[in-house]
Image 1 (tube, rainbow, N blue to C red):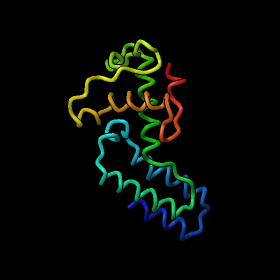
Image 2 (cartoon, one colour):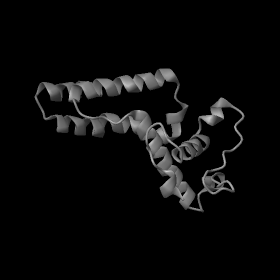
Image 3 (cartoon, rainbow, N blue to C red):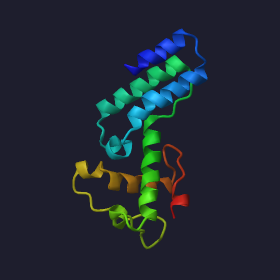
Length: 144
């Protein structure tokens, strides 16, 4: 429904920069709301729907729109960083460095459902950032 308004802005010949701003303020903000919680638990069908919406919005506005998965990983890492820095947070105890001091210890994962929750997915994202991350996000250097 929100893409309708984006189409109307294009129809009224509003500048692409304003169209992109409208996308970020109305469409992307709704899609990214609480993405740190549910973003890694999405199935392929739902991810495909989100990519489709982004692709349509990008073709309408002509602007450069960041991939949804990239935003989700960045926000997950940012929240994990806040949790790691604050000792009073209850989830802080789950973020332990391995003896090497370069990677975090991953909790025992027995089910695929648990693997898609926030703590394991954030630790996996942080550990993969120390290597070559598929989205090019640098995070381990500023976490520790």
